[in-house]
Amino acid sequence: MAKQKIDAPRASAPHLELHGNGELHIDGCLGVRAYGEEEIRLDLGDMVLVIVGADLTMDTLRLEEAAVTGRIASLSFVN
Amino acid sequence: MPILWLLRWARGTVHFAVSGGFPERFLNLCRKKGIALWDTQLRGGVLYARVRASDYKTLRSPAKESGMRIRAFRQSGLPFLLLRQRKHAGILVGLAIFVLLIATLSSRVWILTVAGNDATESRIILETLAEQGVRLGARSKTLDIDRLREDTLLELPQLDWIALNRRGSRLEVLVREHAPDPRTPEPTAPADIVAAAEGQLLELRVWAGTPAVPNGSAVQAGDVLIKGETRDGAAVRARGYVVAQTQRRLVTTPVQQLEGKRRHALKKQYALHIFGLRVPLYFRALPEGTESLQLLYVNHTALPLGLETRALPSEETEVRTLSPEQAKLLALADMHAQAAALLVGKEIRGVEATATDDELALTYTLLENIAAVQ
Image (cartoon, rainbow over all chains, first blue to last red; front, side, top):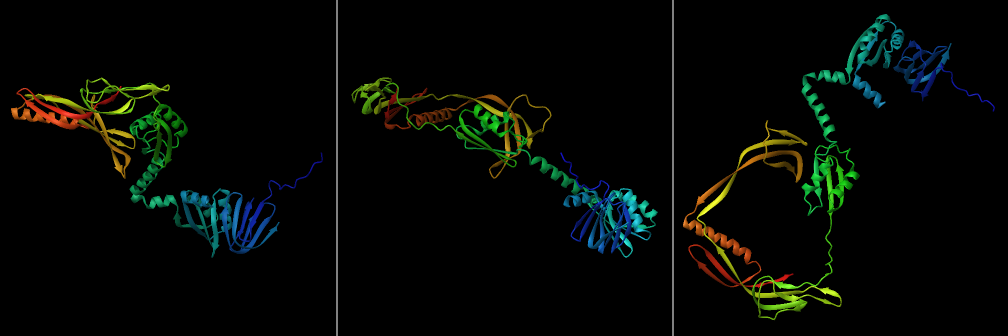
Protein backbone atom coordinates (compact mmCIF):
# COMPACT_ATOMS: atom_id res chain seq x y z
CA MET A 1 0.00 0.00 0.00
CA ALA A 2 1.44 3.36 -1.03
CA LYS A 3 1.81 5.87 1.76
CA GLN A 4 0.37 9.30 1.12
CA LYS A 5 1.80 12.43 2.68
CA ILE A 6 -0.65 14.75 4.33
CA ASP A 7 0.21 18.41 4.31
CA ALA A 8 -0.76 19.08 7.91
CA PRO A 9 0.21 22.29 9.70
CA ARG A 10 2.91 22.05 12.33
CA ALA A 11 1.65 21.94 15.87
CA SER A 12 3.67 25.00 16.82
CA ALA A 13 2.82 27.02 13.71
CA PRO A 14 0.58 30.02 14.37
CA HIS A 15 -2.92 29.95 12.92
CA LEU A 16 -4.36 33.06 11.31
CA GLU A 17 -7.97 33.59 10.29
CA LEU A 18 -8.98 36.70 8.39
CA HIS A 19 -12.61 37.77 7.98
CA GLY A 20 -12.69 40.26 5.12
CA ASN A 21 -10.43 43.12 6.09
CA GLY A 22 -12.21 43.87 9.37
CA GLU A 23 -11.31 41.03 11.72
CA LEU A 24 -8.20 38.93 12.22
CA HIS A 25 -7.91 36.05 14.68
CA ILE A 26 -4.44 34.89 15.62
CA ASP A 27 -3.80 31.65 17.45
CA GLY A 28 -0.18 31.30 18.54
CA CYS A 29 0.50 34.90 19.44
CA LEU A 30 3.41 35.07 21.89
CA GLY A 31 3.38 38.78 22.59
CA VAL A 32 2.90 42.34 21.41
CA ARG A 33 5.91 44.02 19.88
CA ALA A 34 4.25 47.32 18.99
CA TYR A 35 0.79 48.63 19.53
CA GLY A 36 -0.82 51.62 17.79
CA GLU A 37 -3.98 52.70 16.04
CA GLU A 38 -2.41 52.24 12.60
CA GLU A 39 0.09 49.45 13.16
CA ILE A 40 0.21 46.44 15.46
CA ARG A 41 3.17 44.05 15.57
CA LEU A 42 2.62 40.64 17.09
CA ASP A 43 5.28 38.11 18.03
CA LEU A 44 4.57 34.74 16.43
CA GLY A 45 7.78 33.06 17.53
CA ASP A 46 9.84 32.62 14.31
CA MET A 47 8.44 35.80 12.81
CA VAL A 48 6.63 39.00 13.55
CA LEU A 49 3.20 39.72 12.08
CA VAL A 50 2.79 43.32 11.02
CA ILE A 51 -0.82 44.49 10.76
CA VAL A 52 -1.25 47.86 9.11
CA GLY A 53 -4.55 49.69 8.87
CA ALA A 54 -6.71 52.26 10.61
CA ASP A 55 -8.71 52.29 13.87
CA LEU A 56 -7.04 49.06 14.88
CA THR A 57 -8.30 47.55 18.12
CA MET A 58 -7.13 44.51 20.03
CA ASP A 59 -10.43 42.82 20.59
CA THR A 60 -9.06 39.91 22.58
CA LEU A 61 -5.71 39.24 24.15
CA ARG A 62 -5.20 36.01 26.01
CA LEU A 63 -2.28 33.65 26.57
CA GLU A 64 -1.78 32.61 22.92
CA GLU A 65 -4.82 34.14 21.34
CA ALA A 66 -5.44 37.57 19.95
CA ALA A 67 -8.07 39.20 17.80
CA VAL A 68 -7.61 42.46 15.95
CA THR A 69 -10.46 44.46 14.44
CA GLY A 70 -10.46 47.64 12.41
CA ARG A 71 -9.79 48.48 8.76
CA ILE A 72 -6.88 46.18 7.95
CA ALA A 73 -4.87 47.38 4.95
CA SER A 74 -2.06 44.85 4.87
CA LEU A 75 -0.47 41.92 6.62
CA SER A 76 3.21 41.17 6.37
CA PHE A 77 5.71 38.92 8.09
CA VAL A 78 9.19 39.92 9.07
CA ASN A 79 11.87 37.78 10.68
CA MET B 1 -21.17 36.08 21.00
CA PRO B 2 -24.34 36.74 23.01
CA ILE B 3 -23.23 33.98 25.40
CA LEU B 4 -19.82 35.61 25.79
CA TRP B 5 -21.52 38.96 26.38
CA LEU B 6 -23.83 37.39 28.95
CA LEU B 7 -20.93 35.74 30.79
CA ARG B 8 -19.00 39.00 30.91
CA TRP B 9 -22.12 40.86 32.10
CA ALA B 10 -22.73 38.27 34.82
CA ARG B 11 -19.14 38.48 36.07
CA GLY B 12 -18.88 42.25 35.79
CA THR B 13 -16.56 44.35 33.66
CA VAL B 14 -14.22 47.25 34.48
CA HIS B 15 -13.42 49.77 31.75
CA PHE B 16 -10.00 51.25 32.38
CA ALA B 17 -7.35 53.45 30.82
CA VAL B 18 -3.58 53.22 31.20
CA SER B 19 -1.31 56.04 30.17
CA GLY B 20 2.40 56.79 30.02
CA GLY B 21 5.07 54.08 29.93
CA PHE B 22 5.03 51.25 27.44
CA PRO B 23 1.65 49.91 26.31
CA GLU B 24 3.19 46.91 24.54
CA ARG B 25 4.95 45.83 27.70
CA PHE B 26 1.74 46.25 29.66
CA LEU B 27 -0.13 44.08 27.16
CA ASN B 28 2.54 41.38 27.20
CA LEU B 29 2.67 41.29 31.02
CA CYS B 30 -1.11 40.94 31.14
CA ARG B 31 -0.94 38.12 28.60
CA LYS B 32 1.75 36.33 30.59
CA LYS B 33 -0.28 36.61 33.80
CA GLY B 34 -3.30 35.19 31.99
CA ILE B 35 -5.35 38.37 32.38
CA ALA B 36 -7.80 38.53 29.50
CA LEU B 37 -8.28 42.02 28.02
CA TRP B 38 -10.68 43.01 25.30
CA ASP B 39 -11.69 46.08 23.29
CA THR B 40 -8.14 47.36 23.60
CA GLN B 41 -7.69 50.70 21.83
CA LEU B 42 -4.83 53.19 21.77
CA ARG B 43 -6.06 56.74 21.43
CA GLY B 44 -3.84 59.74 21.95
CA GLY B 45 -1.23 57.71 23.76
CA VAL B 46 -3.79 56.31 26.21
CA LEU B 47 -4.64 52.63 26.14
CA TYR B 48 -8.28 51.88 26.79
CA ALA B 49 -9.39 48.34 27.52
CA ARG B 50 -11.82 46.22 29.47
CA VAL B 51 -11.12 43.51 32.01
CA ARG B 52 -13.09 41.15 34.17
CA ALA B 53 -14.00 42.82 37.48
CA SER B 54 -12.21 40.17 39.51
CA ASP B 55 -8.98 40.70 37.44
CA TYR B 56 -8.86 44.47 37.77
CA LYS B 57 -6.77 44.52 40.94
CA THR B 58 -4.18 42.23 39.36
CA LEU B 59 -3.60 44.87 36.66
CA ARG B 60 -1.69 47.09 39.09
CA SER B 61 1.42 44.97 38.90
CA PRO B 62 1.74 44.95 35.07
CA ALA B 63 0.91 48.67 35.01
CA LYS B 64 3.64 49.41 37.54
CA GLU B 65 6.19 47.22 35.74
CA SER B 66 5.46 48.93 32.41
CA GLY B 67 5.61 52.39 33.96
CA MET B 68 1.95 53.21 33.32
CA ARG B 69 -0.77 54.77 35.42
CA ILE B 70 -4.02 52.91 35.56
CA ARG B 71 -7.43 54.46 36.05
CA ALA B 72 -10.81 52.77 36.04
CA PHE B 73 -13.53 54.97 34.60
CA ARG B 74 -16.55 52.72 34.32
CA GLN B 75 -17.97 49.60 35.87
CA SER B 76 -20.71 47.53 34.33
CA GLY B 77 -22.38 44.15 34.78
CA LEU B 78 -24.48 42.32 37.35
CA PRO B 79 -22.20 42.58 40.43
CA PHE B 80 -22.07 46.37 40.12
CA LEU B 81 -25.79 46.55 39.44
CA LEU B 82 -26.46 44.61 42.65
CA LEU B 83 -24.00 46.82 44.53
CA ARG B 84 -25.76 49.97 43.34
CA GLN B 85 -29.14 48.51 44.25
CA ARG B 86 -28.10 47.23 47.68
CA LYS B 87 -30.36 49.81 49.32
CA HIS B 88 -33.24 48.14 47.51
CA ALA B 89 -32.19 44.63 48.41
CA GLY B 90 -35.77 43.76 49.32
CA ILE B 91 -36.92 44.34 45.74
CA LEU B 92 -34.16 42.13 44.38
CA VAL B 93 -34.83 39.41 46.93
CA GLY B 94 -38.54 39.63 46.15
CA LEU B 95 -37.83 39.41 42.44
CA ALA B 96 -35.60 36.38 42.96
CA ILE B 97 -38.25 34.69 45.13
CA PHE B 98 -40.92 35.52 42.54
CA VAL B 99 -38.87 34.00 39.71
CA LEU B 100 -38.09 30.95 41.85
CA LEU B 101 -41.74 30.50 42.81
CA ILE B 102 -42.93 30.83 39.22
CA ALA B 103 -40.29 28.35 38.05
CA THR B 104 -41.23 25.88 40.79
CA LEU B 105 -44.99 26.24 40.75
CA SER B 106 -45.44 26.27 36.98
CA SER B 107 -44.17 22.70 36.75
CA ARG B 108 -46.89 21.35 39.04
CA VAL B 109 -50.59 20.61 38.82
CA TRP B 110 -52.68 23.21 40.64
CA ILE B 111 -56.04 22.96 38.91
CA LEU B 112 -57.80 19.63 38.40
CA THR B 113 -61.02 19.61 36.40
CA VAL B 114 -63.26 16.70 35.48
CA ALA B 115 -65.67 16.87 32.55
CA GLY B 116 -67.90 14.46 30.67
CA ASN B 117 -69.14 12.53 33.72
CA ASP B 118 -72.81 12.21 34.57
CA ALA B 119 -73.49 9.12 36.67
CA THR B 120 -69.99 8.90 38.15
CA GLU B 121 -69.23 11.65 40.65
CA SER B 122 -66.20 13.84 40.00
CA ARG B 123 -65.10 13.12 43.57
CA ILE B 124 -64.82 9.38 42.82
CA ILE B 125 -62.76 10.02 39.68
CA LEU B 126 -60.46 12.42 41.54
CA GLU B 127 -60.04 10.00 44.45
CA THR B 128 -59.09 7.21 42.01
CA LEU B 129 -56.56 9.49 40.35
CA ALA B 130 -55.24 10.63 43.74
CA GLU B 131 -54.46 7.01 44.63
CA GLN B 132 -52.19 7.00 41.59
CA GLY B 133 -50.41 10.21 42.55
CA VAL B 134 -52.50 12.73 40.64
CA ARG B 135 -53.27 15.41 43.18
CA LEU B 136 -52.76 19.11 43.64
CA GLY B 137 -49.06 19.82 43.73
CA ALA B 138 -48.02 16.73 41.73
CA ARG B 139 -45.20 17.30 39.24
CA SER B 140 -46.87 17.55 35.86
CA LYS B 141 -43.97 16.22 33.81
CA THR B 142 -43.56 13.05 35.86
CA LEU B 143 -47.14 11.89 35.34
CA ASP B 144 -47.27 8.80 33.16
CA ILE B 145 -50.45 9.67 31.29
CA ASP B 146 -50.80 6.33 29.44
CA ARG B 147 -50.42 4.29 32.62
CA LEU B 148 -52.85 6.57 34.48
CA ARG B 149 -55.45 6.15 31.75
CA GLU B 150 -55.17 2.35 31.80
CA ASP B 151 -55.22 2.08 35.60
CA THR B 152 -58.17 4.45 35.98
CA LEU B 153 -60.23 2.56 33.39
CA LEU B 154 -59.49 -0.67 35.27
CA GLU B 155 -60.47 0.90 38.59
CA LEU B 156 -63.63 2.50 37.23
CA PRO B 157 -65.22 0.02 34.84
CA GLN B 158 -68.21 2.33 34.38
CA LEU B 159 -65.97 4.54 32.25
CA ASP B 160 -65.48 3.78 28.57
CA TRP B 161 -62.77 6.31 27.89
CA ILE B 162 -60.60 8.79 29.76
CA ALA B 163 -58.16 11.46 28.66
CA LEU B 164 -55.80 13.56 30.76
CA ASN B 165 -54.76 16.80 29.10
CA ARG B 166 -51.95 18.86 30.58
CA ARG B 167 -52.30 22.58 29.99
CA GLY B 168 -49.65 24.32 32.05
CA SER B 169 -50.67 23.97 35.67
CA ARG B 170 -54.10 22.68 34.74
CA LEU B 171 -54.90 18.99 34.30
CA GLU B 172 -58.15 18.36 32.46
CA VAL B 173 -59.70 14.96 32.98
CA LEU B 174 -62.19 14.11 30.26
CA VAL B 175 -64.27 10.95 30.57
CA ARG B 176 -66.98 9.10 28.69
CA GLU B 177 -69.29 6.79 30.58
CA HIS B 178 -71.02 3.66 29.35
CA ALA B 179 -73.99 4.63 27.21
CA PRO B 180 -77.12 2.59 28.08
CA ASP B 181 -78.28 0.15 25.41
CA PRO B 182 -81.18 1.90 23.68
CA ARG B 183 -82.74 -1.39 22.52
CA THR B 184 -85.55 -2.93 24.56
CA PRO B 185 -84.50 -6.39 25.63
CA GLU B 186 -86.46 -9.27 24.18
CA PRO B 187 -88.63 -10.90 26.88
CA THR B 188 -87.45 -14.34 27.85
CA ALA B 189 -90.61 -15.36 29.74
CA PRO B 190 -94.24 -14.23 29.68
CA ALA B 191 -95.21 -11.81 32.46
CA ASP B 192 -98.64 -11.00 33.91
CA ILE B 193 -100.19 -7.76 35.05
CA VAL B 194 -101.61 -7.95 38.54
CA ALA B 195 -103.63 -5.60 40.72
CA ALA B 196 -101.48 -3.36 42.88
CA ALA B 197 -104.40 -2.54 45.19
CA GLU B 198 -107.90 -3.67 46.12
CA GLY B 199 -110.69 -2.04 44.09
CA GLN B 200 -113.40 -2.26 41.48
CA LEU B 201 -112.33 -2.36 37.82
CA LEU B 202 -113.81 0.43 35.75
CA GLU B 203 -111.71 0.13 32.61
CA LEU B 204 -109.41 -2.60 31.38
CA ARG B 205 -107.39 -1.81 28.27
CA VAL B 206 -105.29 -4.70 26.98
CA TRP B 207 -102.41 -3.93 24.62
CA ALA B 208 -100.72 -7.32 24.85
CA GLY B 209 -101.78 -10.56 26.53
CA THR B 210 -105.20 -11.91 27.51
CA PRO B 211 -107.65 -10.24 29.97
CA ALA B 212 -108.11 -12.43 33.06
CA VAL B 213 -111.04 -10.61 34.70
CA PRO B 214 -114.09 -8.83 33.23
CA ASN B 215 -114.68 -5.10 33.54
CA GLY B 216 -116.63 -4.13 36.66
CA SER B 217 -115.37 -6.97 38.81
CA ALA B 218 -113.91 -6.45 42.25
CA VAL B 219 -110.27 -7.45 42.64
CA GLN B 220 -107.87 -7.95 45.51
CA ALA B 221 -104.26 -6.85 45.52
CA GLY B 222 -102.22 -9.48 43.68
CA ASP B 223 -105.06 -10.78 41.47
CA VAL B 224 -103.98 -11.41 37.87
CA LEU B 225 -105.66 -8.87 35.58
CA ILE B 226 -103.95 -9.53 32.22
CA LYS B 227 -102.16 -12.78 31.51
CA GLY B 228 -98.96 -12.98 29.55
CA GLU B 229 -98.62 -15.79 27.01
CA THR B 230 -96.34 -17.69 24.70
CA ARG B 231 -97.23 -17.15 21.09
CA ASP B 232 -95.45 -18.98 18.26
CA GLY B 233 -92.71 -19.91 20.70
CA ALA B 234 -92.07 -16.28 21.70
CA ALA B 235 -92.81 -14.92 25.18
CA VAL B 236 -95.37 -12.09 25.26
CA ARG B 237 -95.34 -9.79 28.27
CA ALA B 238 -98.77 -8.56 29.30
CA ARG B 239 -99.24 -4.83 28.77
CA GLY B 240 -102.26 -2.77 29.52
CA TYR B 241 -103.95 0.04 31.44
CA VAL B 242 -106.28 -0.79 34.34
CA VAL B 243 -108.44 1.90 35.94
CA ALA B 244 -110.11 0.96 39.19
CA GLN B 245 -112.04 2.71 41.91
CA THR B 246 -110.14 2.30 45.16
CA GLN B 247 -110.38 3.48 48.72
CA ARG B 248 -107.41 4.74 50.68
CA ARG B 249 -107.43 5.68 54.34
CA LEU B 250 -104.98 8.05 55.99
CA VAL B 251 -104.77 8.11 59.74
CA THR B 252 -102.77 10.35 62.01
CA THR B 253 -102.62 10.55 65.79
CA PRO B 254 -102.08 13.88 67.50
CA VAL B 255 -99.07 13.65 69.78
CA GLN B 256 -98.85 15.34 73.13
CA GLN B 257 -95.10 15.32 73.39
CA LEU B 258 -92.47 15.87 70.74
CA GLU B 259 -89.08 14.32 71.03
CA GLY B 260 -86.31 15.71 68.93
CA LYS B 261 -82.58 15.88 68.71
CA ARG B 262 -80.83 19.18 68.63
CA ARG B 263 -77.47 19.17 66.89
CA HIS B 264 -74.93 21.84 67.42
CA ALA B 265 -71.20 21.98 66.94
CA LEU B 266 -69.30 21.98 70.18
CA LYS B 267 -65.95 22.79 68.69
CA LYS B 268 -64.63 23.78 65.32
CA GLN B 269 -61.14 23.53 63.93
CA TYR B 270 -59.78 25.10 60.78
CA ALA B 271 -56.96 24.26 58.38
CA LEU B 272 -55.71 26.16 55.36
CA HIS B 273 -55.10 24.38 52.06
CA ILE B 274 -52.43 26.21 50.09
CA PHE B 275 -51.18 24.64 46.87
CA GLY B 276 -51.85 21.13 48.11
CA LEU B 277 -50.25 21.83 51.48
CA ARG B 278 -52.49 21.49 54.54
CA VAL B 279 -51.71 24.01 57.27
CA PRO B 280 -53.62 23.22 60.48
CA LEU B 281 -54.60 26.23 62.55
CA TYR B 282 -54.75 24.22 65.77
CA PHE B 283 -52.41 22.22 67.97
CA ARG B 284 -54.42 19.13 68.89
CA ALA B 285 -56.72 17.55 66.36
CA LEU B 286 -60.24 16.56 67.34
CA PRO B 287 -60.63 12.77 67.64
CA GLU B 288 -63.56 12.73 65.22
CA GLY B 289 -65.90 15.05 63.42
CA THR B 290 -67.18 16.06 60.06
CA GLU B 291 -64.84 17.72 57.61
CA SER B 292 -65.70 20.11 54.82
CA LEU B 293 -63.39 21.87 52.41
CA GLN B 294 -64.31 25.14 50.76
CA LEU B 295 -62.08 26.02 47.82
CA LEU B 296 -61.65 29.45 46.32
CA TYR B 297 -63.31 29.69 42.91
CA VAL B 298 -62.45 32.10 40.12
CA ASN B 299 -64.50 31.89 36.91
CA HIS B 300 -65.97 28.54 38.03
CA THR B 301 -62.46 27.15 38.41
CA ALA B 302 -61.33 25.85 41.79
CA LEU B 303 -58.02 27.32 42.86
CA PRO B 304 -55.61 25.38 45.08
CA LEU B 305 -56.53 27.62 48.02
CA GLY B 306 -59.18 26.70 50.53
CA LEU B 307 -60.35 26.49 54.11
CA GLU B 308 -61.05 23.16 55.77
CA THR B 309 -63.51 23.14 58.64
CA ARG B 310 -63.72 20.24 61.05
CA ALA B 311 -66.59 20.23 63.48
CA LEU B 312 -67.27 17.89 66.36
CA PRO B 313 -71.06 17.81 66.57
CA SER B 314 -73.08 17.18 69.68
CA GLU B 315 -76.64 15.86 69.89
CA GLU B 316 -79.07 16.60 72.69
CA THR B 317 -82.41 14.88 73.05
CA GLU B 318 -85.15 17.36 73.71
CA VAL B 319 -88.71 16.53 74.81
CA ARG B 320 -91.33 19.19 74.29
CA THR B 321 -94.92 19.05 75.54
CA LEU B 322 -97.42 20.40 73.01
CA SER B 323 -100.67 22.25 73.65
CA PRO B 324 -103.85 20.66 72.16
CA GLU B 325 -103.85 23.27 69.36
CA GLN B 326 -100.22 22.61 68.54
CA ALA B 327 -100.88 18.87 68.52
CA LYS B 328 -103.79 19.28 66.08
CA LEU B 329 -101.77 21.53 63.80
CA LEU B 330 -98.97 19.02 63.77
CA ALA B 331 -101.41 16.21 62.98
CA LEU B 332 -102.88 18.23 60.09
CA ALA B 333 -99.45 18.92 58.69
CA ASP B 334 -98.63 15.22 58.90
CA MET B 335 -101.92 14.36 57.17
CA HIS B 336 -101.21 16.89 54.44
CA ALA B 337 -97.79 15.39 53.78
CA GLN B 338 -99.23 11.86 53.63
CA ALA B 339 -102.01 12.96 51.24
CA ALA B 340 -99.60 14.79 48.94
CA ALA B 341 -97.57 11.59 48.54
CA LEU B 342 -100.63 9.36 48.14
CA LEU B 343 -102.57 11.37 45.58
CA VAL B 344 -99.91 11.67 42.88
CA GLY B 345 -101.42 10.47 39.55
CA LYS B 346 -104.81 9.72 41.09
CA GLU B 347 -108.22 11.31 40.68
CA ILE B 348 -110.24 12.06 43.84
CA ARG B 349 -113.88 10.98 43.58
CA GLY B 350 -114.75 11.61 47.19
CA VAL B 351 -113.28 12.18 50.65
CA GLU B 352 -114.67 11.46 54.12
CA ALA B 353 -113.14 12.82 57.29
CA THR B 354 -113.56 11.42 60.79
CA ALA B 355 -112.06 12.88 63.92
CA THR B 356 -111.91 11.54 67.45
CA ASP B 357 -109.88 12.59 70.45
CA ASP B 358 -107.28 10.01 69.61
CA GLU B 359 -107.03 10.12 65.85
CA LEU B 360 -107.79 12.01 62.67
CA ALA B 361 -108.71 9.93 59.58
CA LEU B 362 -109.37 10.73 55.91
CA THR B 363 -110.87 8.11 53.59
CA TYR B 364 -110.38 8.86 49.90
CA THR B 365 -112.34 7.30 47.04
CA LEU B 366 -109.98 7.40 44.07
CA LEU B 367 -109.65 6.50 40.44
CA GLU B 368 -106.21 5.09 39.74
CA ASN B 369 -104.20 2.78 37.53
CA ILE B 370 -103.63 -0.36 39.57
CA ALA B 371 -101.73 -2.33 36.92
CA ALA B 372 -98.42 -3.74 38.13
CA VAL B 373 -96.10 -6.03 36.21
CA GLN B 374 -95.44 -9.25 38.08
